Image 1 (tube, rainbow, N blue to C red):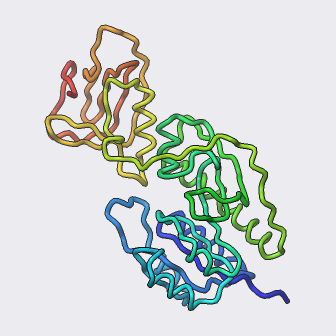
Image 2 (image 1 turned 90 degrees about the horizontal axis):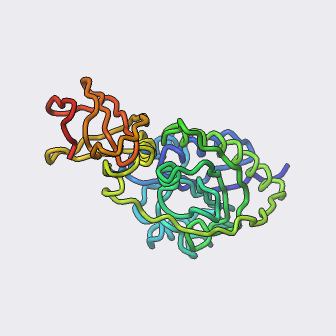
Image 3 (image 1 turned 180 degrees about the vertical axis):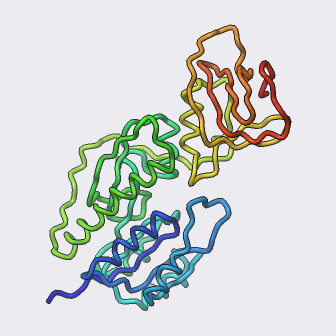
Length: 299
């Protein structure tokens, strides 16, 4: 009987939790240890994997910096074949990668080598992309740069939100991970040929990237809202110095060029229809601190 694959699992988001559970279901894999983080306020989809690890009596380490001397010492004292790192914001340095006897496997929800870098689900939706991909790759010292081990293309539908795309990618990734793990165990892993030559990096999103500007086209604002819907913190607009979160919207055809952006076309309790730079946008369930009326302005 062949030896089990011994792995160290690194992750700190909901996506990580489900992929860890996928690996736990495979009898030929032994999870030597789990490395995770403490909760960060700004991390909407954060998950402490130590809870999952302790249920199965797996060693769990909570580390702030995966590249610290403490992290290196912990990993050097563990005997394992692979690092599986899914849902971790830091890039692993060479000495950390080298603690694995074989190599480290990473995950990125984009059509690698395009769209490497930060916030791939948010950027894909806010930019109005129609396709993305679920990719596992060999980790090196650059962000999302290693050789691709598994790739599955995923369509982005017009009604997809951050939440629906998140779990659509997750369901694809779980099946991929099972197959990739079998291939690793049976030494049948094939490096995929790189046919996509468009290489770019997405930057870190800022607070201002989530702010609605009514001079934008309604479709662009709608894409921003669905990109930042749950599990993320929501797009927002500022009215009379206060911030209001928006999670749901619908584009309304309105090509009247003599109506200024930001004007309220309809107001019904928490539902507002606002004129944009092009067309209009209906917003749902906005909790305003004062009643707004038709013909007022969100400026």
